[in-house]
Image 1 (cartoon, rainbow, N blue to C red):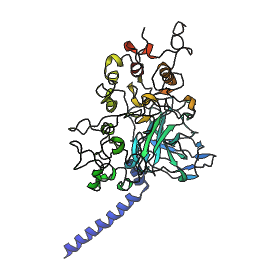
Image 2: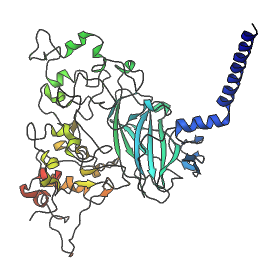
Image 3: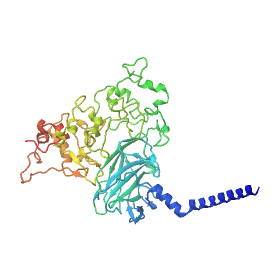
Image 4: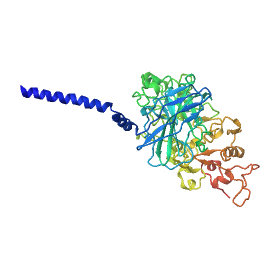
Length: 518
């Protein structure tokens, strides 16, 4: 009996001391600091206060702890449009896009742009570029890197809908993090005003304010992003950005098999895929029956423009690029086709944020533009004869935030679904928001001629547009001071007459321009 009582006392003492020691460790300041360091890798932001009614926003000094070293950044004051708000201390992991080594940079540049549901939950982060099905309550998170200081940031973003409606909101400086080699990362958030929230099924354009500078007066590298919010028809299916309901095929069409009848006809299908349902197999009827924007489903950006990508009205025009049966994912938000039925790998349509300039980066475009279905553009990206001579082969500067070291991405010059210009060319070149119509590119007539060619090329080659940290110039004289024929304001010949290689064609001059052709 004594032995049993002795054992009970031993177990009771152990239990009591375990509770005491556990409570001490759990609530001790040391434990809190260790937990914070383990979950945050040492990134801390102080309280941020934003005041705006056309006046000033004040953000107190931000304290940053990296690798055991604590630094304090100066107070930042900004004027933006929005309501007075206060944000408490926020913790964000610094592992989002931190490279192993960083070169010191002189100009501020964007290292990451995300659409965020909860800034403390990385599972809600969506890459902004070409993202679709974005929740309307998301905010925009922008990470800006710079080797100098930014103590008085101006507004960073210019956000508008595809129809031109400007989105006003509140900008906050959330964290300042040292990421190595004297480079700091400043994380800003943009929250739309309550009276001006994002609307469902709408495309939005995001431009960096070209007037945003660091304390040395160096301007930020221009960038442009586009995203589309989720439609009212499908929003209920999504519990979060990370987890989407299984078997979500083409929005809510997986709910009942009767929906298949919109596109497929069991008894009257015209081919082995039974295409030809209620809306027929013509793409304008089949796809645009829903994607015309009338029932809450987003319309493809610029689809109703004068010049459309798919000029041939058949069922393959949309499905040449998009898989109508694939489900949404962060990695493939636009339902891009797989390379083949035997692989899960999809075609690439990369832009400024991810492109390196190789032919594989633009495999979606080049799957048709290889001479089989459309003009052979692939040769200018894959053939070393052309890439070695190309003046559009660009190595991005270290402070551009880009990994480009090759040919310009297709999207720098071309729209995707439609354009008011011939050859699907963009009217806003250079990735800056252009409100002055006289500075936009506008093609004239219905025939591509030397005048259109010069107008297009000189829109960038005018010492006024900057891409990937490089400015496109137009020297008027050579090294000996002699005037360059074709570069004078009075000249009228097409640029391809000298820069179009042996073919003297605009298609070569645009995609792989040579320095000159005798």
